[in-house]
Length: 543
Ligand SMILES: C[S@@+](CC[C@H](N)C(=O)[O-])C[C@H]1O[C@@H](n2cnc3c(N)ncnc32)[C@H](O)[C@@H]1O
Image 1 (cartoon, protein in one colour):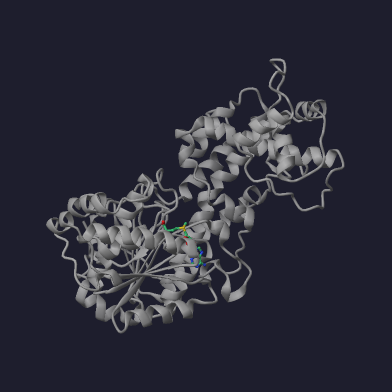
Image 2 (cartoon, helix red, strand yellow):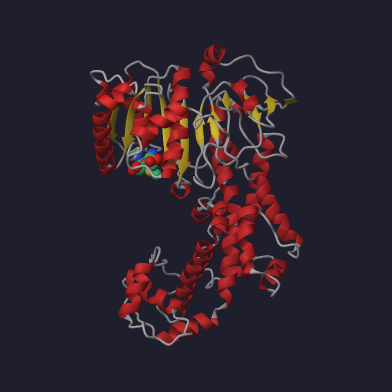
């Protein structure tokens, strides 16, 4: 099965331009939700920012807090909810990229999968395994199609992807330059590599088709380099030096924040043959740094500012809530406790509204158990709700605060703000529902950035959304094969920008080749285009 191509937008939109306009409009309208800070939620009374009819509905006894889970996971809104609320949820879900994974045939390749399972699993959890199988398949396919001989794996970590691309017998046999800024990651990756090489030189591997040759160790080289928006030139130079005249491409699996933006920038600024990218950690994307900003990259989102709280919201994975209802309720409670502690500290003069929020991070069960011991609360009478008090004692210790409120004060604070739990759960859910819209803006911004510099773009779900909520990819593929994707609609555009639009998702596969190489490459690789069933004329800005 081939890699689908085309930039993907949800059903109901005729063009990427229309989609961008609606994304921006809707974000403007609902930005107040993800912009809310959870810590000062009670102090600032963020609840009062919700529309009046929503407040009344969520405050009513008819509302069941557990209905928030299917609302966030599936967009199911109780029948008695206000029309404006169900409209909001409908709109947010309608703006998401479709989430079903598009099968690129990676798991059908029994030889490659068997190979990976036999030799490359060391250290990989099932989630990583699935991701590596899909992305390595894609990278190898793209490398073969483009005649690429060096793959530069940026943010390579422990080198799971690098090793499969470099050494799998079913792979492209390209060399790999694995780049990471952490010395510890490099050391770990090299240890895994040594063990693998020993195995691949063994008799068993030889009977499995591995023909170890002199110098094969050098097919995977690791280096420690920090890649930033301001140092893409250095990455490109390093890649060129390593390639020594051979074709090279970029890839990244879960490249955090600005690292993904830097990989795309390096691609656009260089002669790399392709890029295959799966970003993550949107909260590490920088804004307001001029040309060095990780967002926006494209002119389509110029002037849009997302903000740190909203970037964090984009990392939410509400699709998982349904499978983990008790963990979801627990996270509502922990958020509520954090906000309540802040309220409590201000109420008791331990903080002022203008102080920076002290960092607590997650309070673990071990820390709570230690608080029980320290405060000698083991034998406390049944029925006393000591949970918040325990959280307070554990959190204050983490903050290294010398304040020690009495148990009575903690219980009183909790009682006085009991209603805050439901309000927090509601607001946390509503802002999480906006998360995919923000992720959509980030993904489309990156796609549009490529579109502004490249001739063809495609997008599709690469990983299973529940197993791997973060997965945006970039690569290149024959345009024609996109018609294998169900419900594919071809948008034939003016000049050389061809885009396919079909129901895919926020897991994007961006297929591109650069405009200055488009004709030469496309004549060789891409079969003739199928007749278009839709015609959309894009403005010249895409070039
Ligand atoms: C989420 S991990 C992914 C690792 C690996 N690709 C994988 O999927 O297993 C991100 C990796 O990128 C590295 N990294 C983050 N920012 C970086 C930067 N600016 N330059 C180079 N490496 C970076 C981190 O050290 C980390 O190993």
